[in-house]
Image 1 (cartoon, rainbow, N blue to C red):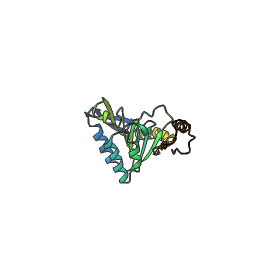
Image 2: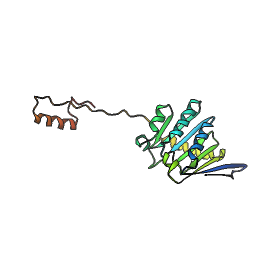
Image 3: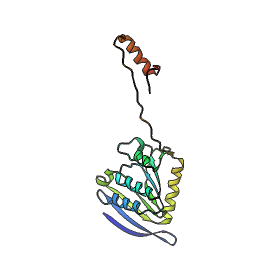
Image 4: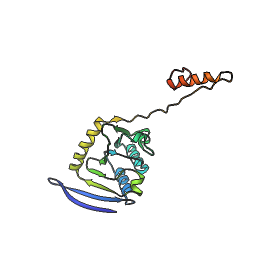
Length: 199
């Protein structure tokens, strides 16, 4: 579902506002279209981000030479279906906001004039199952205000770094080694003393 409004945003300026509603109200497609239309830069803040169409749109923007910055909540690097790692491996700049209890914003600022915000998380659930609202506000004044808040969080956030998987190799007990010795070795491994254990 879609509505369009025109409201005063600042002295001498009007804000064009388009409203979308989910489930299945065209929110995701509208976001993808806005990202594909970007000409300069995109700053996104997401509490939850698992939408592959939106992730791919950001990657296309990066390939076009658009500056893309992605700010995520601290739970996203390990969350199921999160795009955090995939965005990073595709070359996008990703930071994690660990200062707040939750970085609960769902905001995109495009080209210093378009602000996208609402209750809508960038997820399949928000698109197809949840009741959500999404606002598209075209207003340089509102974009400036939103960007100032966004950059405040960006500055204290930390770069997302892929963590290598930890592997543990435990050597087996030789056939001629007593079981008591195996128990001793297990105990030392758990304590981190066994030099034969590689982490």
